[in-house]
Image (cartoon, rainbow, N blue to C red; front, side, top):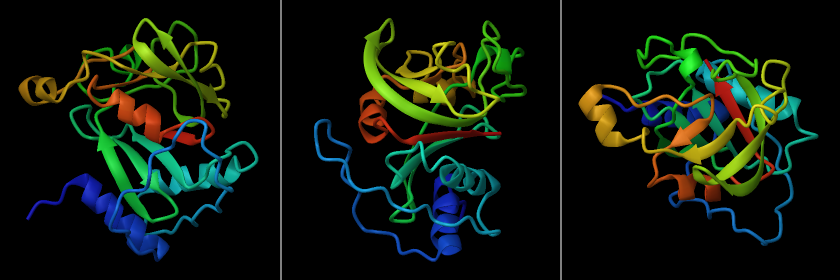
Length: 214
């Protein structure tokens, strides 16, 4: 039997952190609702996948800046773009809530191979950046409803100035991934399927950690 990476990572998170998976999805973040008190991050364990270990370490490292710590996002850019490599992690419940297709930047994949080979924080690079991002407010731009991001590390601290955001795009599509073996590339933004962007924006509200690993 072949296990999907979401199942493998979810199992590792549960086993590694000694948690029990809940049977229902956590409620989405609702605008104008009272903010829950911050929760402590689960400790990273050696038997967790490296990307998840790094994300949990980043959550602790940026604890004074991350308002909501019960759910984080992990973009695993070591995976091919046809994979569901963007994961919402229920830290409190110990499981992967949902996984999505997500783009990487053209500058990270000049050959359009589907793999992000290089990363940059430089304006005009059109590349993805690694590291910790703080999710900001939503706005409506040329890609529709989107969410701003603030880079928290030296390798991505120009994210806001570069307009690296979360948005929907026609070039991110499950059928495209199946037919062409990859999805399209962004200019460095985290772009999602049009049919999924509303869900991503709702679940990944302001004041949360998005960690990009590679």
